[in-house]
Length: 191
Image (tube, rainbow, N blue to C red; front, side, top):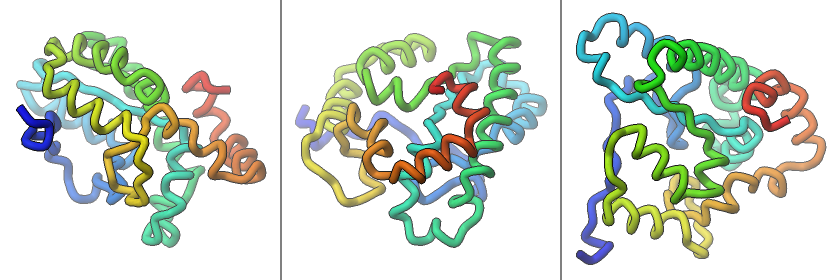
């Protein structure tokens, strides 16, 4: 099969419009909404829930190029982002302790640093094999040396993406974000 003919191995999740962001992120604070679904849907015991979290300095750096984000406090407020993610992580930790086979936490930075290993771990949790089409897709989208100016592109050189904020942001911006998000950064074990 030619890789250009291959369908993406990912599906869009049915999340309300309020929860979706144009930059591909799902709004922080979503875990509370998930709790309602878990409590009210009898099939939820069969669900596998993956929570992807990223260093907030990387998130804020990625958002700097999005013009619509500059005037949206739900997008440009680091304090708000960090408190929402911190709250999510606290809920997610509780959920994982109650149902460890149902909840999986993955850090964007770990995934970017070793796509193959982290994908294998994720798929093991999902009880799925890492198929050849998935491997081809990941290779095409994470090993590209082509620079993309499109902030919505999924084609990147993944091992440089996770730490890109360290060169994009000024030392002052990094210090401010680190100070603002210190409790969250400590929860993520990156401080």
